[in-house]
Image (cartoon, rainbow, N blue to C red; front, side, top):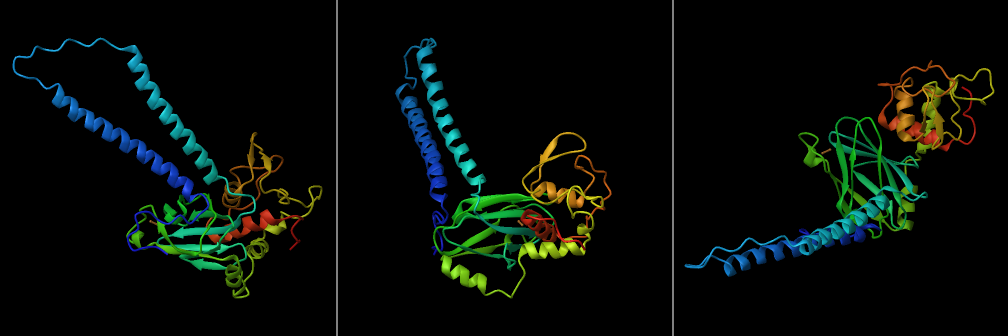
Length: 317
Ligand code: CUA
């Protein structure tokens, strides 16, 4: 629970205390040097002030040793802050492999969230303690930013591409969710909450859903409905096969017709659905229509979840 005017948000994620430690250390360094310099300015201004009848001071020669010291010490401090920060940045941008997937779509002015199991929420996110949660996020309109102070996580949510963030909640409770990027008139109203529950209660919550379909099942239905299965089925050797193989595609390197290669990640698959001609797979001509404007952001995320799940060729229509 949070007090009405907390000095610091509670530390509710596994790496929150590490972010705070870095933040407070930088703050301590700043305070120490600010005070040191301010006090010395006042002290020397008084001590060496010009008095009546005193001679003008001599020019002070350069002191190499002193200059080296006052260059080296700040350099060392800055490097410590840099490596410490870079290390934490890597932690915060590398979700564990077993993370729970949640898909987030931001729009003016609400958050739409979709769990892998298919359960959807608006402006609320329910997650269990002790499990890493990875958010894959995009926006339907302008730039938003998904910010949960208690987790010490914040990431921009951009139209036209995916960004991710992850956290592992460590204490049950309700925490503020903010949009941290000005996105129009009701930006300040684009708020919600993250509800962290004990794993058992979370399972109960998940179980109490409207018999919904999983994200993968929704993706499969869309895949059939939009006619993707017409070309993206069968084995690589089939005569009738017109589109690249999707089995095991996710996360693999794909050779491109134009030379070079890309990793088939969320952003690549999304682009290939909306603008198939932009990065053609080696050995194929583009005869796929664009799906721009024909499929919602949620729909694209569902199809990506489906493609990710494929272990055998999709069924023929
Ligand atoms: Cu969305 Cu500010």
